[in-house]
Image 1 (spheres, helix red, strand yellow):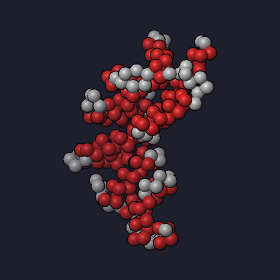
Image 2: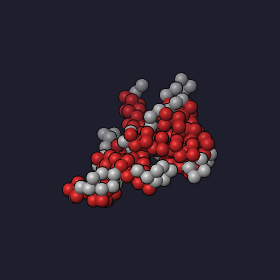
Image 3: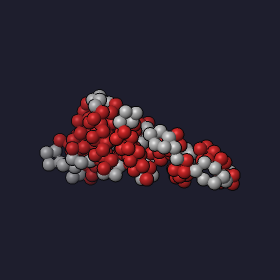
Image 4: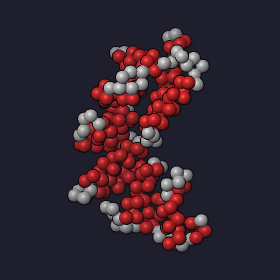
Length: 237
């Protein structure tokens, strides 16, 4: 392999790392593209690493009959979904995400689940199937997304209530901020579970400890009023 091709491969792998990290932390699309643009612009030979050339390199990797590396399938799915180095093509993105998912790639499974949930091929049963695949592998955002999907039918299905809480707790225990916040809110309001201020306070405190800042107002009110904890004005301050 030529030196230039090696460098392109390294850059494509760095782009993949950014995409995976962004998926795991549920970052918006503009944040992902900004991070990738920064990566390419900081390269010593940035003019050689155009999006189109990187796209062509990944296409070659994916079309290689000997390639069984699902990370390139995920990357090609991302390139097509976001129009990186090519025209945006959701159907092509889904195809490559699905190839990755079928090989057991958890990011591929997550992206396929999202497509079935709200994308070009809506199918809630298939969406939950793929969310659960990734959730069972320990992907916190998949655990959270599965829980929220199950909440859709919680008013009529008690099993879905239990499953939703189960997966929310999994994501919360893994430190996923959105899972922690929703779980605290559910215990606070008694949505699908008996009201439990002690548990709500526990999870709001976890959210505050994660330094996300999302729980500050709720935590102050809990400390001032003694909900789920002893009244503590110093802690509130």
